Amino acid sequence: MKALIPDFVLNAWLSVWGMLPPLMQYLVETTFWIMVVMITVILSVAFTTYFERKVIGAMQGRIGPNRVGPLGLGQPFADVIKLLVKEVIVPTKSNRFLFIIAPLLTLIPALATWAVIPLTDTFVIANIDAGLLYVLSLTSVGVYGVILAGWASNSKYALLGAMRSAAQIVAYEIAMGFALVGVLMAAGSLNLGVITEAQSGGFLNWFLLPLLPLFFVYLISGVAETNRAPFDVAEGESEIVAGFHVEYSGVAFALFFLGEYANIILISALTSIFFLGGYNSFFEGWTFLGEGHFLREPALLWLIIKICFFIFVFFWLRATFPRYRYDQIMRLGWKVFIPVTIVWIVVEGVMSWMKVGPWA
Amino acid sequence: MLFHAILFYVFAAVLVGAALGVIFARNPVHAVMFLVLAFFQSAMLWLLIEAEFLAIVLVLVYVGAVMVLFLFVVMMLDINIERGGQGYTRYWQLGLAIAGLMVFELIQIIMARGSAAGAGNDFSVLAEGYSNTKALGAVLYTEHVYAFEIAAVILLLAIISAITLTMRKRPGLKQQDISAQVAVKASDRIRIVKMASEGKETES
Image 1 (cartoon, each protein chain N blue to C red):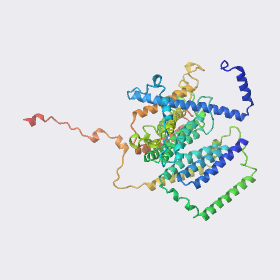
Image 2: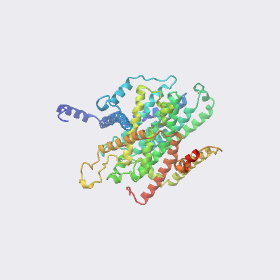
Image 3: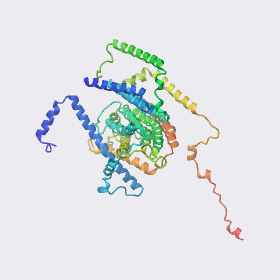
Image 4: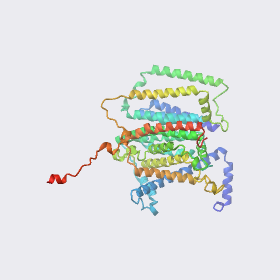
């Protein structure tokens, strides 16, 4: 680092930095980290699309993208450039303002949620006490993008897609919230950092095993919440063409695409944090490695491995299951998941009252 | 605290603007979106006084759930937009009376708060480590636990009664019993009968 930047530049920078008022320093620093996390997430989204096509290709006995760049790794960028140069068509009699703002409304909450996600044991952009509630409220705001896109398009297919999506998201949000109630009961805090800390100390201390039903409810609700297969009735190619984004093209469509994949990464990250110990190591319980062994230390790498696994699960589900019928989606959400979560919250309450389990 | 004051006036201005938008928007979907904006801005105001729990719950419940259903209903209405706006003059006496009452009540509250040692009119920072969420929970589950539980039961009652109102049993309605479908065995649907071959006998 020292060799790259001459001394006088560094000194000048440091003296300018020191002159700034603390509030300004804080703003610059936070903005810098926000940019770092956001650019990382957006780049990950690009490669997630590549990953999806490769995974599904392999599962279906195909090769997947392999033309652009080595191993086809340039494919996401080729797609982005293709979408950027295409014309954005705003349908006649559509509501122009809402039509344009709708893709942004799906993307922004997905990116803003990263503010409270603890990436390592020391780094989180905003360490707030109500972090879990913040996550819940932002994921629930994301539905507006879909509904407004469907309504503003002035198209029957889009409206049908929006209706389906709204009902589905409202239904699964309740199950998701209840699953998180279990997590916060176990951790005793709404702060995501504290929740991760509560799961330190090896695999057996993760909330995965004691909260196994809630883990499955959360993961499946997450799939439903992101409108991914097998819960993709909002898009339903075979019935309503492309659902809520049927009228979108070019950059506007690219934003929806970005939002969908950013949501997948986000749900994967949240599942890892709530149930798989976030940045905590898999091998923390291996005491024979000795104190301070690098495999036992918490690190960003562990979180990334967990996130990648859940992203893979999303694609795996998509390649495996046929689409749910709409009434069965509703039945699963209201009549199966919500009772399961309520029962497990009661079980958990009894367990913590009897002092059994990791929270004792 | 100048920064706080600037933020407060910006949020408050947007809030008032959004509230006016709810009334004056011709298109009902626009009105709903203005209302969403208004909720968001009031959540921001609450964040400024470090009531983060209330702020986030406001967004979660009203923006995330209630307004989605509102939008859902409004989207389905086939409203003639040109016709809107005629109703303004018809009920102006009633509207004025309600507005007057609300202004009177607000003035009462402001005067009561103003006399109580200047509470609530500065942007004082709370002590480090003070958690609004924890404080609220502690009061809600100890001091006000009965009121809290009763409110929960009343809400549950409302849910159940709403569902009961829509439950009608029509005769001849075909319903799917998923667990019966899953539990079905091959022997329930087909019967395999073992019988001797008849080929030779028919031939002779």
